[in-house]
Amino acid sequence: MRWQQLFADLAAQFAHAEAAEELAESASRARSELGAVTLVDRLGGSVGSPLRVRCRGAGQVAGVLADLGPGWLLLVDERGAECLVAAGAVTSVTGLGRRTSADVEEDGRPRVRFDLRLLLRAMARDRSAVSVTTDDGVVLIGTVDRVGADFVELAEHPMGEPRRASAVRAVHAIALDAVALVARTAEAASG
Image (cartoon, rainbow, N blue to C red; front, side, top):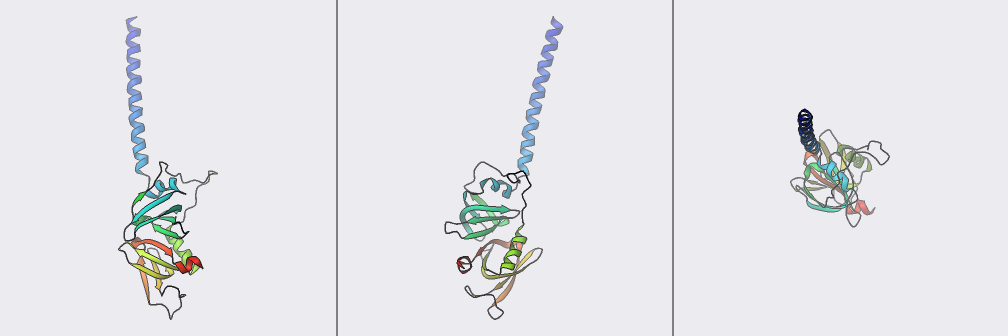
């Protein structure tokens, strides 16, 4: 009888140690997984929610998070104006819920995500006038002419005028890392 009691005691100690090890491993795995979550991943659970985003150079931008992708967020304000925010310029976000997004569609397919360069190239094709705010607070108005690997080229021209060679004041090559936000100008948004 003493041997059975000893074996039972040893089995209980082993089970307790194994459970403690599993709990520690689970906590470590959770910390590791959380350590791999990017800001954009974290914001994915808040699509459709109103947020306040602080950006270097642009200050606070508020709106409903309409979409996001690698390196960018799309906010829509109460007037319906869209603002493309470069994730690299974001310093803080207020209004987040508890959820973090999985990068899959509702039907289980992986979500296709476009990076900031691809969105800027679409703006170049669109030829709409935009305002670009850099991370040091400079605001330039014009038309996106082209997008390179690490820069966007903006033809600066007066607001309300189409991009014509005679209207272009200057051409700016802006480092993509310096872009804080891009918004369509009021004329482009209403037209």
